[in-house]
Length: 279
Image (spheres, rainbow, N blue to C red):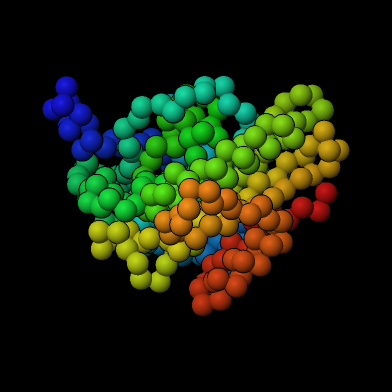
């Protein structure tokens, strides 16, 4: 049994995801089928530097589950976007971590390291950072939806206590809010979520994978309960929590945009227009 556990920790499988040129191929996970405007990176739904950034329609079991904009230079997602529809399968599934073969080339073979994305060896070589989900498996509806989130193109190096502490508490609280308020007049649950990472200028994991300075998340939905569109955002620095009692402040989307602008003045490509709600 111990041998099987050791072997399984080294396993990684190919996913059946699709690298596409335009987000229109996978836009049903975005509010009004409109992607964030990321100046210099993603404009009018198209990637400007298609050698560096890749749209991935995250597909599992021949069904598209969510969409990711992936940075092959930093080997982390820019963001993942998805539609929250409520949880059907309530447990975290056991899943082998997957990679995206099309990011490397169609003839790529499974190996320990990859040129354009993180591998299991990158995360195994440290005790400081977790494989932090961008689209959390806890937000996914079915077991298959949850399984689809276990891809290395949907994670970033996240400080362990931040991942398991304040960020996890934020995810659980936001999920509760969406379950209660993101209900339409027919009784169906539906909310749009975009979560991303702010890359650092030089910090890396295993001298390969960018360690982001911060993570951000935003959601919006129409609430029949409130009879209005509701939205909020969160921001957290990617450092170890100084206290187990730490909580992240809930912010308006305007506050979140302001944070992103102030922290990205020297960078090209700030996802400042995550949602534009003029409903």
